[in-house]
Length: 94
Image (spheres, helix red, strand yellow):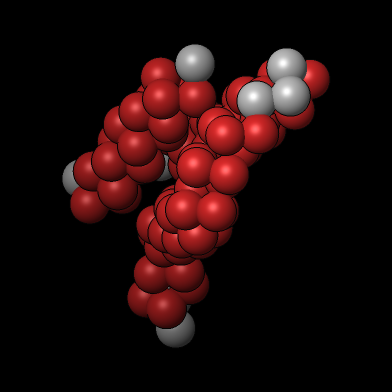
């Protein structure tokens, strides 16, 4: 599930940037991009929770250390890309 939500977050972010570049209202796409990023993180947390309940320590030891860094990076990139149009608009105003 987290993969599907992550792909939707990426698509919404690309739409956000495209709509800004085209001069259209991009705020809904921005909100969707950030919302699906949050939902992706919740889905990932639920997956880890299931592994803990099942006491699948091998899965936790294998996946969690590497995914932590990746998820931090992707969330930071998602936030930066989604708010970039707002920052660029502020920069353009006198």
